[in-house]
Image (cartoon, rainbow over all chains, first blue to last red; front, side, top):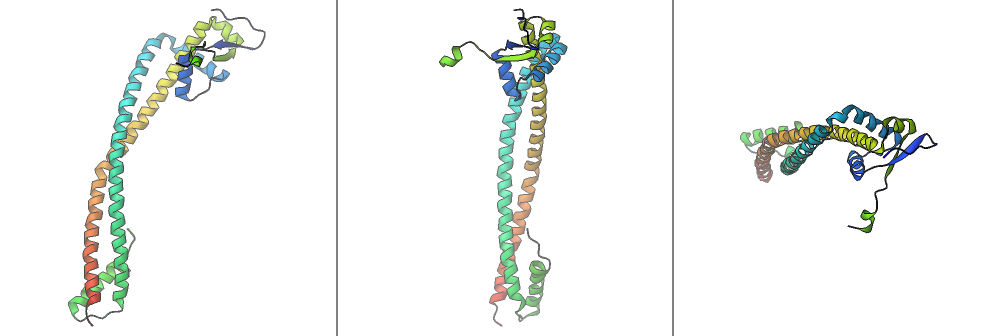
Length: 133
Length: 95
């Protein structure tokens, strides 16, 4: 089909569904500049059209396989992250309780030297050196 | 298939008239646009594949590291529970 001569500076041509599908996949609109760029690229690669189609098919397969692997692996990672957050929160909660208990213990004097030593150790751990988990 | 799908496909694009006349036929223009878009799609897929590969690597790294981190927090929790018992015992001591 020859192009119809037009008095304007541009001509409109109908395009195939395949082209529209490709623009959707690329999230681009086919304005005049985009069309010119596509034509320039197409001119450079016209001799490799079938190779390009084959490459694209392989890339689509690879992407599909990787996306499936990623979903599986990301789900495992998410489960582990959730367990880690759980363990950390439990530790943080018990540590906070211990800090409160250690503060109460500060004012207490204990009977034996061994108990006083233990008291000092726990005060050191939960008051002097306390860090949030 | 809906009635809309059976109608002739009417999407059109505009190209500069001189470029159109230089290429010659509508079929050739469409073919050039298609090949150009195929090339762009290939580049875009390569980027997506690189991104997915990186994200898989990051997730695998997490899967390798997180069990050690979970063990560490569980050990710290066990120690903290023992300390709580000690603290409670000391607080319950008669003066």
